[in-house]
Length: 172
Image (cartoon, rainbow, N blue to C red; front, side):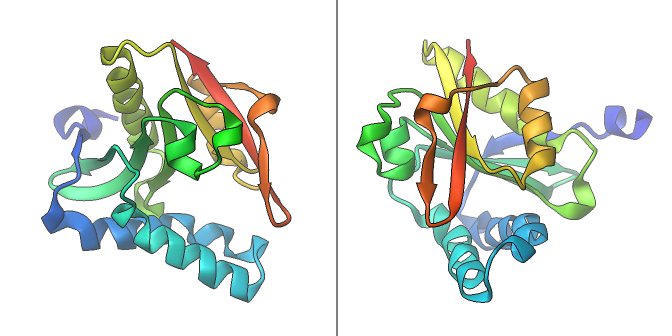
């Protein structure tokens, strides 16, 4: 723990020279879920993750660094409609997507630092809540979200294929 104190995790906005690194960190962060997909579905999903930083709807991408090494990232959207292109969700609040922490950086507070930065951003904009979606097989992520104070909001769940995306909301 003392190592973290001397080398704090720093969160900043993604800069263009780090795009390729973040692409790879994201895909490697989600690799553990490959077995939950068919081979074709995983290929499609990993391609979407890889290209997600090019999404014109993203408001900002936050990256977490320790000693200038990128350990994780998070995408922040102005609304659920911008995040998922599903206006029926009626989420007119900041929405977090693709929080990823590289496997070798897990357990070091990277996800917590990214969530804190996203929540701070939403509060600074005067927003009253933050949303995100996850799936049952991302059980470790769910525990982190719940520890952070996020609660289930079943009214905002949606499905893509056989995968149910479960909504969590944090009231600020």
